[in-house]
Amino acid sequence: MTRAWVLHVDLDQFIAAVEVLRRPELAGRPLVVGGRGDPTERGVVSTASYEARAFGVGSGMPLRTAARKCPEAVFLPVDAPEYEAASSKVMDTLRSFEVVVEVLGWDEAFLAVETDDPEGFASRVQQAVLEATGLHCSVGIGDNKLRAKIATEFGKPQGMFRLTEENWYAVMADRPTDALWGIGRKTAKRLAGLGIMTVGELASTDPHRLAAELGPTMGPWYRRLARGVDPSRVEGTPWVARSHSRESTFQQDLTDWTQVEDEVRRLARQVTEDIRREDRPAVRVAVKVRFAPFDTHTRSLTLEHSTSDAETIGRAAVELVNRFERTRAIRLLGVRAEMVPPDKAGA
DNA sequence: TCTGGGGTCCTAGGACCC
DNA sequence: TCTGGGGTCCTAGGACCC
Image (cartoon, rainbow, N blue to C red):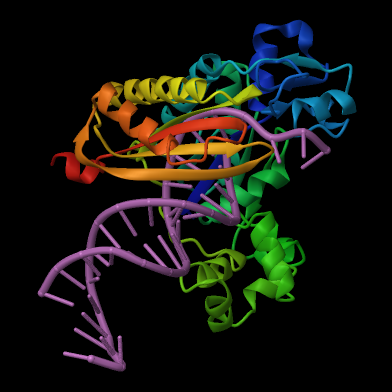
């Protein structure tokens, strides 16, 4: 019988795999892509190949640490345009199935599929992606987006897994709460403080207690996650950004305020280009400062009039950075522009 | 483990208005 | 005047995701 399914397609070690495509001699070697590809610099791992993961290297890890764990790894710089191009090919392939496709980033998408054989469909998707791009993917099959997304992990690499209302608790009940999509380290710790360790325990916690402890929106939402409930639909309409930002971490902390202002102006120019490209004037500007060693603060302001003028945005950014004390060394600067909301832009 | 860069959404306090 | 209650906007921070 034909039923509605959600498929979550996730490319395996996407960034590393794209690098191997253009440099086949790297196949089978531990490969780490991150920063500028120099493991002595400040930067983190974007993606490690499975060979590198065997040494304990993983996403988000400082490059220096990765080099210590796996000295023989090949380190490569992040090449965003290359990954975007590969990603477009993948997404076009998914759309060729004439189903609703919701893109979640470079290497992930949800598909809304009506079929009596979701595994067969998933298999055809994997085959098509491999033929079109040379890339392998895993597929999560679910009765909603949340379950499909979580299912993918159990199918990796190059496989598939079905997770629905029927097997949800059998698969998930004893897993830690941060196995859920939306619960991270901090919330898992807060829940542990309430004696809630597993998905099963979270699912059966009194919702009023969760609301009281974690907020009226988030508390009940976490409980719904634990029950595998997700009413959201697969959205085919292209995603529209609400803000754009540029930031950079300096290899050496900045101590000269003239240089700080120059960098803020440079970032503001980049952000202005980004929003002009989309023809979306800014309504609000924010500046982010990370002081050494790592404490991070933001200052923001609402503009009197929305604008795409580089000069105005630059002046606002400099004014914001000057609200910070000038005596501390700065590790990172960032500038963000919030745009006119799309629904108010026209229509 | 000395911790990137680009995003989203929620919370909470204060201002301000009626 | 020693004192209300609701709504909305602004701002800073925090958590999470890829």
